[in-house]
Length: 411
Image (cartoon, rainbow, N blue to C red; front, side):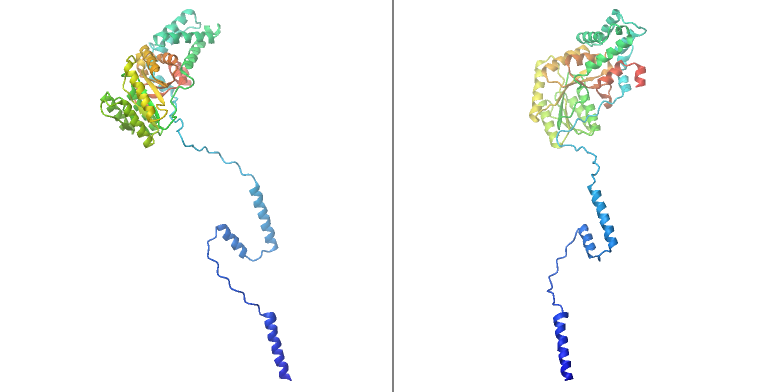
């Protein structure tokens, strides 16, 4: 009997083991492919593998999470706006007027001398506290002698009278300041005086004028300014009738580091300028400075040829030439005004370059030219050095020409 009880006990134990203690075997799933997790996911995975946190740890984690959500919900401070340069034509980038009145005054030394424009005006006012009709005649005489021209002289004196009351007319300082104010008004043509804007890429600039005005030299000086401003230039040797002009431009090109496009001796100047514009487009240049042969303003056939050159530039690039600058020798006085008038009738001039102002005592000629033509003065030449080509500023020019020494030193 005991053996029976032992067998029954063993069977019962085996049954209990299979029914209650042994767990069924789980089917083994294929291993997931090994993949790289981002840093954030890896952090989460590590956190998920950690043992359950205690109550205090859970409370601290909840507080930290709430603080993070609050920080995110706050509006971040506005970022500083950064102006992104848009693609397209370059912005106006020529260096502005240097603001050096003393250097301008030095270049205008002849006009400021005793026999010059400023010196003669100053002599009229010296020691006088009252302005009588005789003084007005003296002012008129100085303006005319300085090649300001009859119409401009009469207009200036009339506006001075209109500006000042009868009481002010007896105050020499008030009259002097009125003259300066009128000069600034005459020279500020629609606020466009000064360096021209670069409206296209490339901006095509055509230099025109009579023989000896200084076109080629002005191109070299202007190329120097543009290069210093970080602009790439192509020079077009359009004066194909003077081998010396072509060689002079090549020398400037080598000195400044600008490519010079030239043709054969006697080649069509329009074709040279056409090729120069195309070269500038291919190389990504910013400006094309085009030299042209000097021509007398009285020669109709030569002026007609200049019109053809301008049309050829338009064929090379729509809108070209963007600037047609008339280069005038200031020492020519009233003859310079006659030249400018003829050129304006033949071409759509956009501005004036007045050269050799340092070589004349008649600095007032700039008033007559600007007032008669209603064209802005872009640059003035006051010497032979490359940096002697100044961006024109009416305020600074009047201060340099008609300002007193004490006022200049105070400025």
